[in-house]
Length: 140
Image (cartoon, rainbow, N blue to C red):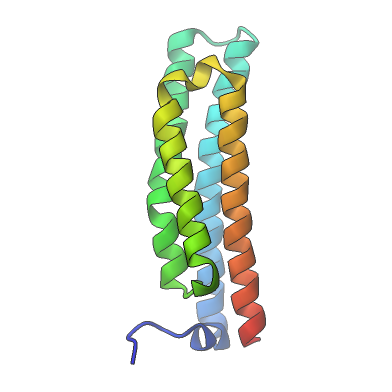
């Protein structure tokens, strides 16, 4: 028998369900902060309100925030038993991490790179949200 809580047991407890939702909200909040920091720095540089070095530092800070959250992404889905989509979630996390690493040096020079990161990020959130809903529906 697994020592991990089953999804069924997880969602039978309102206290645990609320804790899961809170963790996901905090997690996504931090990821959105990272994306917003990147977007804001790029926008301000494009509009001439921020110089190259300040923009680069802020973009780097946003990417670091995003990367730190991505490291926990798959672990969170596993911890809460979101097994129906774990491979899909893991693939999206790995793809986004790889894309960020490759594009990091050129990110603030190219608007399309920012758009691509946000697109990958939204797909990742959609996958996790679908997994949460599917697991919840199975056990409701």
